Image (tube, rainbow, N blue to C red; front, side, top):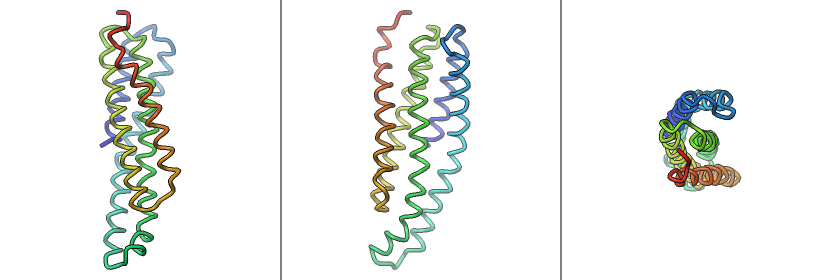
Length: 170
């Protein structure tokens, strides 16, 4: 669901940018938001496939000892971590784009851009949580957790601008 949420948030950010003629770098923002929207939509299916592989690994490892089971599941859990990691990266990009659009957009679509930022930030937090869970369950490379945390930090920093919406000139 995080991938779908990022896709929807990117579409909303692109819409707000399209409705704001004169937006600095507006065309580039629209192109980037649409690219992210398409890629995030692709990840919806990739996430389902990765989860299916984890379920298959769980099934295949029934009856194994704890260490053997973890070793058998590690590759599936590591692969399953890569999808939400990319979702977190894309979501952080949407939060950054959306807050920029909200800062300079026409007044009547600023709320839409703010909403895109809030949705994308929530999706980033969700995706990062999934990376954390998968890495812990599989004893996977901790670098995945660190990379995910960086995306969460970027999204959180950009989302802070949404809270200052009342201070923007109208």
